[in-house]
Each structure stands twice: as C-alpha cells, then as structure tokens.
Image (cartoon, rainbow, N blue to C red):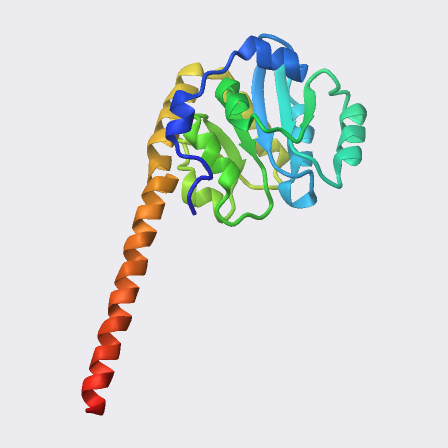
Length: 218
C-alpha cells in the first residue's frame, strides 16, 4: 500500500511553524502532537484525550485533523476534562504535509486499521510515533526504534508513552530518522514499479500458458 504522496514531497516541503500554529490556534512553544483521521469510534481519539488529562505537562497540544460523527461528543469531552487550552480541532485540511512538517510527534490510537496511509505519511515527514498495537501499525512501527506501540484501550500506557516521548528530544529525532528510512520501502514510485513488474510477470505467464494449450490442441 503506497503512500499517497512520494516521500520526496516531505523533503521539499517548506513550512513556517509560527505561521501554521497561529493559523490553527496552537499555542507557540507547545509540544505539538498531531492526529489525522475521521472523528469516529474506530479512530479512538477519546483515549488520547483521556491520557492528556492525566499528564502533568500542560504544554502539550493535541491537534486533531479531520471531521466526523463524533466531533460534538469529543468537543464535550474536552470541556469535561478541562482540556480547552490543549486540544485543537482543525477540521478538514488540505495542508497536511505542512502540518506534519511542523509537528513534534504523531499519535495514532486506532482500534482497527488496514495499512494506514496517515501513518505512512507521518513517517515520511520524519515524525516519531505513539500508536496502538494493532495490525497495520505493527507492520510499520518498530518498538523503541520508530516509536512506541500501546494497547488501544490502555489509557495509562498512552500516558507513559506520551510523557516519555515528549521528554526526550534526541529520541524523537532518532525515531523520526528511522521512520523516514523505513517508509521509503512504501514510496508510491517504488511500489508502482514493483506492481508493474508483477503485472508483467503474470501477463507473461498467461501468454506462456496459452501457447502451451495451443500446442496441446494441435
């Protein structure tokens, strides 16, 4: 499953963090955790909100990019947990590559995924990751090398992972570099080339089988 964009795009992307944060309403100087995905039960944004409420560091901002049926419910939860100054609902965005470029960490707590494109793109942007330990995510993120894998329903484990990630700048950079290296195997250019080879191989095999069938008939 290739990324929607070539990983080269993120190497070329220029983004002004001050400008983007001002546009989004993100407090300057905060530790910026970003999620990209629909506001649905499957994407499990609730667990990050619950974890954030238990973290003493109030300089962490959770930026949620996406829309969905749970938007009102999640906004009410933010008020209930007294997180109004730490959570930003960005809605539908067309500048995800710029947003990822200025983020500090990508959080992806989904309950279920295939091979997640949003996660692939975060890795292409060179971000460290805190994500759920589910199929798809575990195929991409290597524990303690690209980020931390957490059980999707374990609020306490997300608290620990986020605290550990946000406190270690060197580890963040190392994880990000590792993810950028890994994701090159999923680059759309590379995958397209591999798929073309597979199709040609199948086509050649079918043609060979047709020739054999004709020889048998004669």
